[in-house]
Image (tube, rainbow, N blue to C red):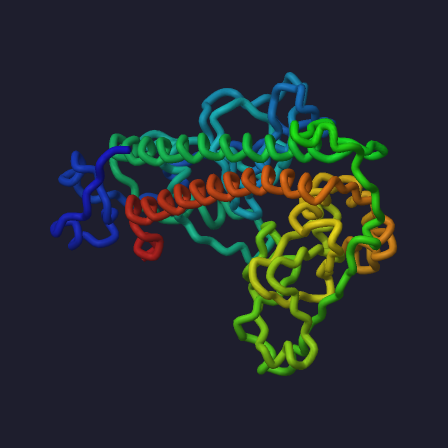
Length: 414
């Protein structure tokens, strides 16, 4: 990454006209000029590039894009109406204002999108990063590019400095992408192991077994209800302020995105516990049994500290035949089968019925083999967590750099 220097005393007097960090060769290049976004970026409507058939297939060549988080919706085999000239471009969702930088041929899914192209004197990657610095709240359902964004004033340097900033941030993007590919590879490896370390439905042995257990015989089968007791949680009264704001995490679906559960958006007090709120001790396996996420995935995890939990979550008290860590990984491996038992509630949320859970078959080897499997997968989880943290630190580093490589937005709007 190129060297950058703090704003000089002379530049500080210019305020919003220059960023706080600037590359040495541009320290005396003068102030950044104010322009409207529309003077830097032209647009095309995506009408000519809309996909006709949404029967996507990963074996097809051309990606179909959205400007939102999903980005690549799928791949099409349509040969006409492919955007492939004037790349790279920015795609801009006219309603949500979400953006994506695109440097490959594509088709579009929605007409509610603008294809933004750099005008003379503007670098497209630089302009994409400028858009990322704009904090804009979409409060109404309307198109935003022409009426709101195109007239918006920004500060922009000469083209050579734009290129320098863009190259700097691109090198960081490449590092983030490389680390993300490593993370994806680790997750794929884990998913592959989950499929092989546990028996398939109807089988009594896994496809992959550690050498020391290959002559250990078949695994036992037991109904879920015979190895676990399901304890329900609840919600302390919201009318009693003294129940809330304590130091005991109160776990709901929004707190169950990691397999290690130790914090929540809401905490309760010891008074709430003394008045009936249930506590799951450290090491308890928690399972979400009701919520909209159950239409897509099974949420579960083990408490790293004592926690409380709401009525949509079950705490599992296990007998001596099985460990929490092993059961968690077994349920992960059985996710598709569990999802098939999810029913819809009257409000549209998914639900795992307790009777169905009680009858759900669990396959178990000896406690020693359970521990061996758990150790293997948990060590992989630790690698995944470390890799995730590395990526988050890189993203935070880029965010911090951008705050200094561009004039602050409140200064720009001033």
